[in-house]
Length: 357
Image (spheres, rainbow, N blue to C red):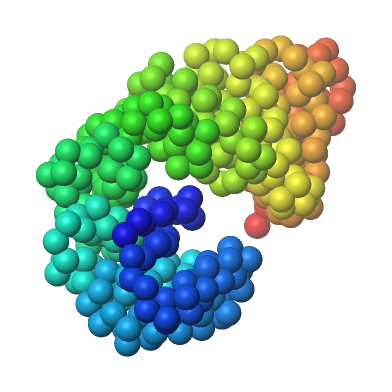
């Protein structure tokens, strides 16, 4: 039996197909149902795919018996479909049924490990990290026993296990696994994959938290470059990475390197949240401060004005954040020698502060 894996939707969510050696008349029917179901799933037609998977499973059970490995593969397929829809309660028992069948059939260690990966991924999505950790450990033990720890499927297991450690702040364990996983993906030409990029971001984030920025920078930079090539630069995870890189360069006094990251974050937030959102004001103010530190006052001024306008609109003229922004703006004007304008803003800020409730 040949099991083929499609690219995972999330790490370790793998779909099995088969080319069976059985030749009963019903085989053509379930093969057709499985192929059609897989195509429907790819199109997002989940109800159609569900019906076809269920139909194939019933035919297989009657023709082959309930404990046949083909049935296990089909149960896994249906579970993946449910997981795609976040129907975790429906998916979990199917994964467990599939796993129980693999366990009864000798020579199916690889299938068991892949099914454990799926179940671990399911529990990770449910934030059941303790359960996921045990499943990933079981899968990893199989890869070790079969001497397959350097293949991409084993890497998926290790990445999932590392994620559970990272979620539980056990970053020493996570770091070693993430490093090993990246080495495997590098060797197999998979560094442009979403999974590799996510791992780069996580490992870079760990190093940044540990204040090991020299090691964090190349990981975060490589991940961002790949994300930009993939057209997924606007994701929350990517924005967080840009923020980290901006902070790293700012802390080094390399404001010229930090500025593009902060500017890109502001651009993304403005596009996602609208031009008058407070998050946009925060980004504008931070970028303005960076330019101020570089003595690039002409670049900082419109950003302070933008931030002040948004904050006044959202918070009111007497809000402490608005008053603070006015003070920064006035300080910038003084640096430019525009003392009269600075005085007017300072006077306005003082009046508003005096009448605050």
